[in-house]
Amino acid sequence: MGERTILERRDFGKMAGYASLAAAAGLAATATNASAAQDISHKIKIAGELRTFVQRMALATAFVKLDVDRKHFLEVLTEEFELFNADIQALKSGDPKYAMPAEDNKLVLEAIGTVEIGWKVLGPQLKDVIDAGDVDAPHFTKIEKVNGHVLALTDSLLHRIMHEYKSSLPLELAYQIDVAGVQQMLSQKMIKEAILVALEFEADKHHDMLVGSMQLFDFGMDKLNGIMLHNEVMLPKPTDDIQPKLDEAKVYWEKLQPILHHVDQAHRATNEELAELARESDILMDIYGHIINALIERAAAV
Image (cartoon, rainbow, N blue to C red; front, side, top):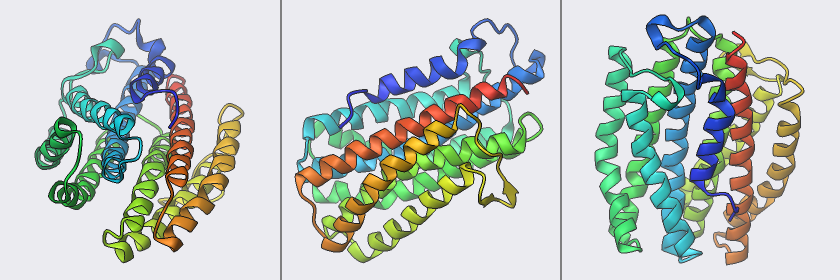
């Protein structure tokens, strides 16, 4: 399902995006404009990761229920569970390794607290799956019912960060990081929705959600290519370091789309189709991770 683990992806993202911060001496009060912009871009990235982790944990749980590559997806679930907790702590208390200070904005802290409340409901259900190595029907239903709510809370947190620190980072750059993060989240959400259709778990509802997610993914590609408005703003045309990654994403999306359509129409999937879904979605998630890292590096030039 992709040779690189989630932890390795996360470490790569930090090294690629924040190596230049290792020598930073000041925190928020004494930061230069460039380091402040990079700090806020880091916060946006982490909040975006929370969105993706919520969907990826739900996806992993669905694969466990299907008994498809169970060991691998239990490892994925465990890694994402740990990273979700670590990211919440980083947003609250800071990330000294990369000179990101502790959060002191009251409204952002309240938004973090709201995510924590949702996580107190979802987290124990996921931990039961990790501990048992399996998922029963009540846990699966509870996870699916709650994960959408927690997703909404993480999205609200990200946009609270963007609003509260809008003077520290150019709006177009913040939007680009956000949209690329949404693409990462959707790469996982679409697979989960297709699996739920195949499982006949509220199939009509998840069919509608899958159709919407696929359309949003198309929109996100257009936005990052500078040919569609995002919140009434036209994002910049991609630069030479980002365009090849967007072109690569298009190639893999063209592989993934027909499989999603087939599973959605057939209401079933073979293990081979599920493996292909997971493989292509992981590649897409990595590609957009590279794009986010490139955008965060750009914050250093603000």
